View 1 (tube, rainbow, N blue to C red):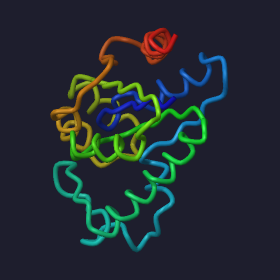
View 2 (view 1 turned 180 degrees about the horizontal axis):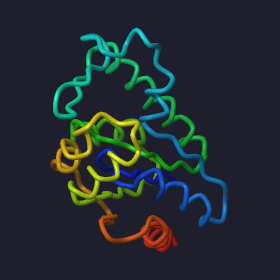
View 3 (view 1 turned 45 degrees about the vertical axis):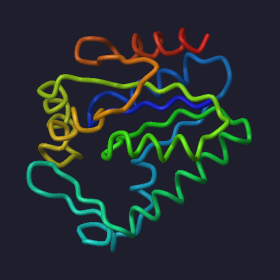
View 4 (view 1 turned 90 degrees about the horizontal axis):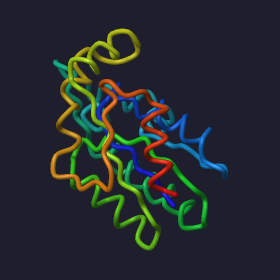
Length: 174
C-alpha cells in the first residue's frame, strides 16, 4: 500500500510520516519530493531548465526537473508494485495533474490519498522558524497543492499534532 501525504511546505507532512513509521506494525519507507530535490545536481537550481525560486515563495519547475520527477515517480512506484509499503511526502504543485501522474504510475497498488492542511499563517510561522525555506513558500502552496485533488482522508495540523494525525491515518488503514 501507499500513503500519499499531500500538503504545502511546512504543513507537517514529514512529521506525520515519521509518526506513521513509528505507529504502523510493519516497516514503511518514506520518500518525499525533498528526497528528489536533495539528489538533484546544483546546476538545476535557479535555472529555467530546473527549479527557479521566485518572489513570494513561488516555484517555477523547468523541463529538466519535470523529466527527472517523472522518472522518480516511476521508480518509487516500482517499489510499491513490488509490495513495499511507502509513505509519500508530496507537494503536488500542479494539483490534480500531479495526482494523475501518481495514479498512472501506481495503477494496481492500493493508495490512501491524504490531504494535509494547515492554516497558511501557521504554516508561514513554521516556515520562518525552520529557516531552511524560501519566505512565502508555505503561504503560496497552502491552497494551491490541494486544487481539485481528491482525497480519501484529510487532516489539519493547524491545531492537531502530527501524532494525532498519524493515528487517524493509521486507524483508516486498519
